[in-house]
Image (cartoon, rainbow, N blue to C red):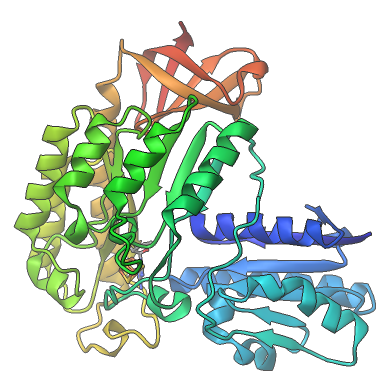
Length: 437
Ligand code: 5AD
Ligand code: SF4
């Protein structure tokens, strides 16, 4: 049996697609293994959202080249995902030892590509067409066994001016609601305890279907499915966050009380340049409304510092929003120029040192907020989903609250993949500690 290894970079969508790739290859009699040195075929499922992602991939490719040479070239190297879609044939021009390049909408062709390379004289196989075909809904499995993700939309129509995603993932396409419901039921029946709904902009779900289906309805229907499980989703767009979605989250017992609400920037001027479609004040009002209507909700966010033309005053607006909204957690990035996007063409690019300095100030402020938010949990009893042994200490279990806080406590490993209650005895910035109730 041929052995294949898949290395995943980037976001949850890539994790989801790697699980599908794995299933697809297993269905075609491949054995999926972890160790790249023992693999006949290695696939890199790549990301290109920021410069750093590409740099990481170049490093890995160098390593694979060495392994391939040691094996007398008897190894197939394939690249999938956003970087593959973006670069296409260029990748092979740059790195001749790459055999296969497969774009985001061509995953289904993966077994054929491997066959073509191994059984014909073809030197390289490239599939990067935008076929507007949704990747097949395979019954993928997820390694951890308790958390499964389902893509509800593919692509993005927003064209935020810094973002490469609309170019590499194409226009927004929603998966019909009945398919999502069926998939959720299958995962729940298999014993998964958490369903993560994925999309570049989940709350514009259904707009392209013309069937009246929308994100609020989808959540409502999924909440009706029997069984004890959590429903999470990422990411919504602040501009499309309607009241009915807030109401559904508030009243649906299975939908966790956590909302990832990407801010990107606090200054209305910069938000305009980013084409985000909301002002600073509108964003803060939305965050307040969500907090008011969903008591105990945890808000998290994405923030970019050093977008073109960002002044110190603009940056202070970002800090101001962080202070006012009091996020539980934030993913914070320095702006990274992506060629082909509008922002890459803008004058007024910001010096790297200024970006670094702003990022550090933002991180410092956010750490304080995270710490304060963690403190609130002290003495409380919380429901958690047990994920497995903690990385540092195998005697300790790592778990997560519905609000996405990591909780460590002593307990039997058999509790993995179950819901338990834990009393919080100690809190740190990123981690809560407790004892099983
Ligand atoms: N530079 C920096 N961060 C970016 N993101 C997307 N594109 C860029 C870029 N060019 C960030 C955004 C987005 C997250 C997934 O990645 O904050 O929400
Ligand atoms: Fe990129 Fe904006 Fe689409 Fe998110 S909503 S994927 S940031 S273009």
